[in-house]
Length: 198
Image (cartoon, rainbow, N blue to C red; front, side):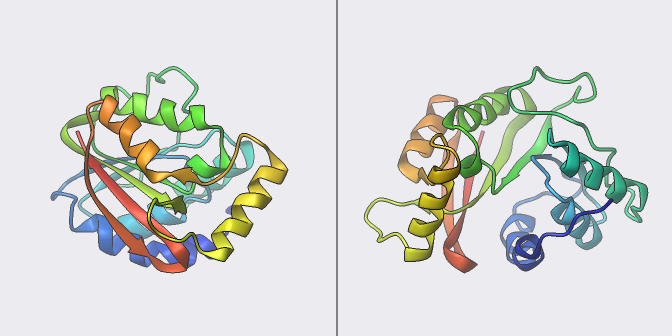
């Protein structure tokens, strides 16, 4: 069954505006933790030149991705893979990608998941490839929105290992893995897009 996320419906347009201008013609994209699959479908509809590989380890999310794929009218949308950042590289992913996209994951998973994601960029991103992160962050020197503070507390209440990540800490970890910060873009609902290049 295909799931639906109101948040994904709201943010897919703004995310597309930021990311699409940076993707070359015919770009190949790996999305880590694709959730409902709405972003993949939207991007492939807007950019029929790209290929988009969906992944997710969660059984319910993976079922939604399978439905998206089965109903796809976009040849660039690839068969989803059930995969977690903590897993070894699956044999289906036998190539490098022009971009690795991760939307709203690193704050609802342990810090080690963010580090594992960054580690995988060494293998999966082609030279000059783009890492795109989206979500709420703590940004030093900027007051954190009350709604983000409340969200952070609710995540901590669910799992003490979860919570909003400090952007400088993420950037430093990315730099250690050979990724160069390009820019941070303010997005609706107190989220940001963060872009790195290999």
